[in-house]
Amino acid sequence: MSPADTAVPQCVGVLGAGQLGRMFALEALRLGVQVRFLTPRDTGATEGVGLTTVGDWRSPAVLRAFMRGCTVLTVENEWAPLAEAEAEAAVMAAEGLPVPIFRPRAQTLALVRDKLIQKQTLAAADLKVGPFRGCATLAEAEAAADALGWPVVVKRRRGAYDGYGNHNAANRDELRQAWEALAEAPEGAFSGGVLLEAMVPFVRELAVGVARGADGSAVTYPVAYTEQADHRCAAVVVPAPIHPEVAAAAAALGQAVAAAFDVVGVCAVELFELADGTLLVNELAPRPHNSGHYSIEACHSSQYDNHLRAVLGWPLGDPSLRAAHAVMINLLGSRSGPTRVDGMAEALAVPGVAIHLYGKRECRPGRKMGHLTMLGDDADDLRRRAEAAAELIRL
Image 1 (tube, rainbow, N blue to C red):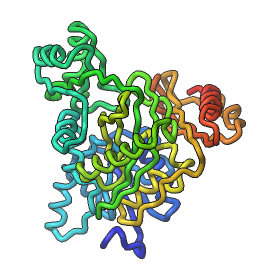
Image 2 (image 1 turned 90 degrees about the vertical axis):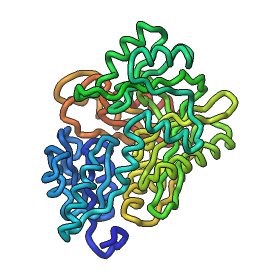
Image 3 (image 1 turned 180 degrees about the vertical axis):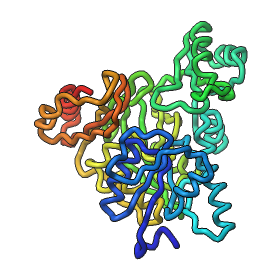
Image 4 (image 1 turned 120 degrees about the vertical axis):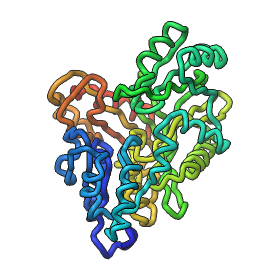
């Protein structure tokens, strides 16, 4: 059974069950596609949008039961056990059982989930990146920082996300503290060291989303300006206030990155723009991304719609903007404990605001609990109104 055959019921299995899975499922339901999730921890984000199985997602038995009936298997994050799923699918196929198509493949995730291997893959493909070093010991990290020049950015090789697992270090004491915090993986196992990067003198951070089909066809979303705070995305402005030549170069670079990693689905590519317009690749994610949330309201075909189309082999949709400008603001938690939302009535009274809350049961400071998007003709006025609306909501 081909996933492109729209005459048969479709079921997409997703490894992971957070807000990205939630928004993906909402698009899938609109097109009559069922979605099921497998996650080791249930946050509540996918409640009501698809069957969520909570269990050991590395267990062959759990994976086998989950994959039965799925047309396609995709992922919500880079740490999903896709290699284990592919191995069990091979056993199932040998037994004559139907198995899903994997989009993306486990090899793609293997190249992305380790930040050092990701950087090495980018460099090997002649895609511009900033200076970096992989360091297996603190002594290697100190020598690398001397060679790269202080200050440096220190990143956990595996398991880092949303600013967690990244530290800046301006001297040896700060580097030692970063090493102690990052050289171990979240599970407590040695992570293989850290990735050290030179502090790039960029003028702005950009992101470009690419939807890529299994046949290599691709469409590119408008280049976004991403505003960061504490290594975490705070706001997204689309289109980015950049020269058209830089925008064209960013789009081409995004497509080249997606092709180099053989991504099928959405690939988000984070970029640094230097003062002379040069672009460097910072990181990529082979899945829908925070920087593309705006596309739900702002684009003819959202990143979630196009991820669905790509993994099912359907024609890719139009990623162009419906309005002149869009602004997305992340809604972060400010307190710990069961989720409580204050100020929703006041925020909903703001004309033109689209609010998304992710349904997470537990809140903590800095956790992504939702976002809001606004569209308009005046970028500066739109940004002011979006920020004012976001300030009304307290989580």
